[in-house]
Image 1 (cartoon, rainbow, N blue to C red):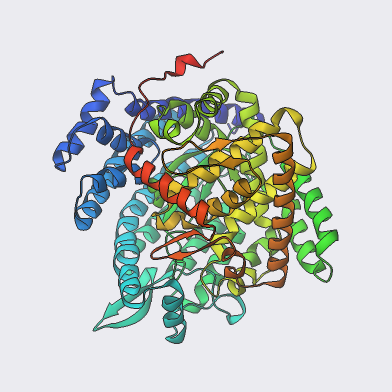
Image 2: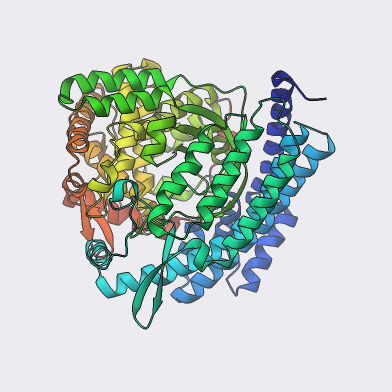
Length: 618
């Protein structure tokens, strides 16, 4: 007997709680008194000839729990390990994390199937999808090695700057074409090098893993064709989606791939159930050809969470557009339509594969394809529960005490451990506001035109976050004002830690732009090395910051409407200094250098003098 939507959602709630329990078992790796978990960590370190100490144990635990590689990289760099050795150990750490998380997924699957939760259709969907995901895990390792660690390093060594690499690619017809025959904003191909010559090959042509994935998707489609989704009546939509995936994967014409994957996005937008499956969507790792990374995941909603952020973002956008958007009404119409049609899903990534095993996002707005969005809108996914659970389970770190004054650290920790309702309110304002902010000011070809210097992504994350910030400033909540600014501060300063992580460069650049406003308005003061960062959220400084964000956002929005090269905005705040962007402002540049030096030294050092018990209910 099929289930009603109400019964189905009750099952979703039960699964959601079980996923939370499963996640807590993963977070147990951060409890160094758990001898079973600690032994796994120490075995990994021993097998890779890494020194066993508190810092290395934390770095490895963090690789498993947050799936981030930077703590482990920082530890290995501090040990003066060779670059090639670091790369090999990072690959081994991927397999360690994969094995642990796959075991978790198998336990969740067993729970769902043993209790007959959801329906036959969705149980088969999840089981088969998991089987496909295991092939994505293999593909990502090969994709990452070939594109990021081989071809891109070769291009960088040969041509130096991003602009020169892009110039070479364009002159030699090595960039793919997208909608309308213009240069694509992303690619589903790779460069293959033979005898010092580059040729373009599709994923299907180059990677055997993709052929395996296609066969598994075909099998999934076949199994689902024998079942009916009588709860949400989406069985045909799933059939169409999987067929579109197969068609896109097997396409050999490199200049037809964007259109084929646009069809995948369009079919996917029609799937509106509480269980959301996803496909390759993002392209942060590859700065040159924006090769879409091998990602594959299943998302599950939390029926108890809701957000009404859309209406406030729309109100803000219309208000600013009336002021600066004369002559660009088609852009307004497109963006408002996208907001109106945006599907908002609040929940968790239940299963995740491939590039997701190198870090899960806090939220996401997709698809990136503007034609698909023009026709069908977007989906916003936000994972607030995961972020809060992770933040509360992580140990307090010494770096905070090195950088900030004691009062700021204590108040931040007190807020995290106690103010659950306000924490979710801030998440809605900043993170979900950020995702809606991505939608604004964009036309069909904005990214392609603005990305001539390769810097579009390096301003887009600031544009997104600041859209949420402006929305708050237009409808201030007195009880959240100081915490809201504190959130901007910790985000901006914390993003400095991503300086050397290529796929996170857009977020690092975002942080540098925020820092300019925070320092200029007196919110932040720093008197040089060894001194603490002073945070002063006085009414006067708050008003200055508010004014700075309005002025800066209006300037940025105009550049988007005019489709000015992204570097025309970015260069006001940050410029390349060797391999990395650094602030134009010399004082902020000194602070960034100091913070990164302290981060390198203290990234894995736990604050043993402070306990979470000191803050709970105080």
